Length: 418
Image 1 (cartoon, rainbow, N blue to C red):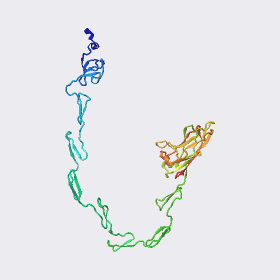
Image 2 (image 1 turned 120 degrees about the horizontal axis):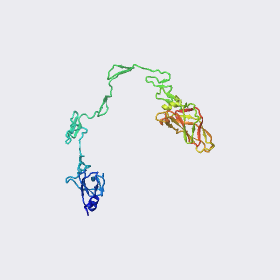
Image 3 (image 1 turned 90 degrees about the horizontal axis):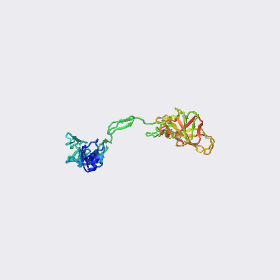
Image 4 (image 1 turned 135 degrees about the vertical axis):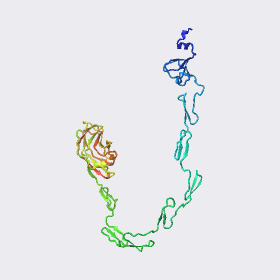
């Protein structure tokens, strides 16, 4: 074998497979071969390449690479530190510079009635600012020890009222009052003769007799019984009248009869076409000063107050050639598009919000709407404060158009519709 046959690392490795080659400190820009020994720049330990024939440039550092095996340690002293004692923690992220921390008591802080002097953090001075001892005063006896005092009441324990005296309660905050006669003071119509606080004489210098007028009756004498012979009470005959007897002498009578109000002034809706399974809106011209507008804006005076809105002046055409009705329903609801946070929609849950054509009829057809129930409280609960549109939803299989329309009126029922 000639020396020239061992000139490159692969030839030397094949001929001398167990020969170790010292390469010094590992550098990431070098290429290393099997059995090369280097020193890790991280922990200063020696490592030998055993897991690969060669390692290219920019390979992993030996202490974290599985291709390198530890060849020897750099120290014969302490190799690692572990915290096992209570209050000690060791961070071995950098094995050559472990960080040892105290996880026990680090600082002492003061609480209620406790003061801490941390001038020397390793030797804090703890002082109590609470009451150290108790001293007895009048009516109090203290026995026991300063740490466990026994406090006893050595004064008056309770007060009991006798004749002419009233005691609010036997213990605690006691109020003592005189229940007997203290003095007599004459008022209007009363005369005090020979005023002796112990034995006063009282005479009437005021009204001796009483005369009655219209609407009153009297039994006469010194102790007359006076009765009212006029109106004693006012009661409502039926639900159309309410009586407020909060002040019985001045009852308030109000009518609960229905009131007629304008819901929308006369409006025309030309060229309105609503396709099947679609919705369209008809603008409403509500009188701002009308009863309907005021009650919806501010709330009705009656909790059950409701309107019946008459839509009989609104007729609809349904046009679909000469085909027959296969889908019958169409519906109406109310919309508010001007109140903040809207738009708001109200659909009557009472009657009617849904209308129907007769199945099997042949188009074209015409249908008129009827009266619609409108609960003021339910509509306001949705957030609605005005009605600016009525929305028609066409559930039929024909095109819907507005044939005729006029003004819409509403009747207010204070107690709802019964």
